[in-house]
Image 1 (cartoon, rainbow, N blue to C red):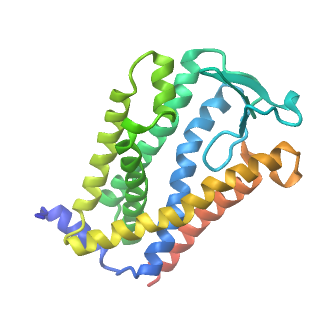
Image 2 (spheres, one colour):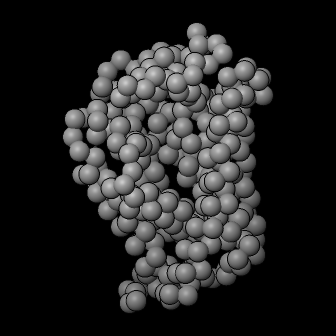
Amino acid sequence: MVLDSKEVNITADINHHKIGFWSLLILAMLVNILGQAIHETGHKLVYQVMGRDPVWGFTKLVQVWDTPPLNPEEWTETSFEGDSGWLKISAPQESRTEKAITSLAGPLAGFLAAIMGIVALKKSTATTVKQIGLALTLSISIAAVLYYLRSASRIGGDEYELASLMNISATPINIFFGFGFGLCLFIAIRTLPTWQMAMKWLGTVFLGSLVTGVPLFFADSYIIAQIGVGNPWFQPVLGYAFPVFFVNILAFVGVFAWYRRRRGE
């Protein structure tokens, strides 16, 4: 792997303060939570701008399917390809265009966040900011590349919904985002000078994604159930169910604390 002088400088900055396994794992866990929050916030902002007042979980809009919620008048009934569901929004989306923009907003927000991680890696003068940028780009891009590699065998998801609304195949959408995230992943890995270092970062960031991502995915079912029965501890704060809002804030504060601690070393 041959690096130009600018990339050599970036690599030197990243490794100026060597990161141990546990420190990198903690960072990976924190940025994975934030990466997921960025994706979901992309969706949420469209709903919010259009006046739908959504309530969001860790990985999706709060929703139930097939079986009506206890208080259906507090939800908005919807359907998708013959399936009936209820969404925790104040009013239904009025057009296919609005629905398409909502579906696109999540992947696009994640893609922009991966690019911003590269910008921080390339442009920041602070070593710890470069490390955070690298971890963020790797975390988002690894998950996205694995997701899009399964696109041929997968039905559902933002891209499938977007394609259905646009009356086109989901293949070009999957290829566009898959290539984009793959390029971000390649650029991030290319800043690491040896395969051993690349494997350390990739393996640790992937492990951090699993450690946090799997619990967040399964937590949504419990959050939706608690919202359904009106538990006051699960009511929305700025459009997020309270536990989701709390965890996201903790992750942001955690990254800042990690930055302050590493900067002082």
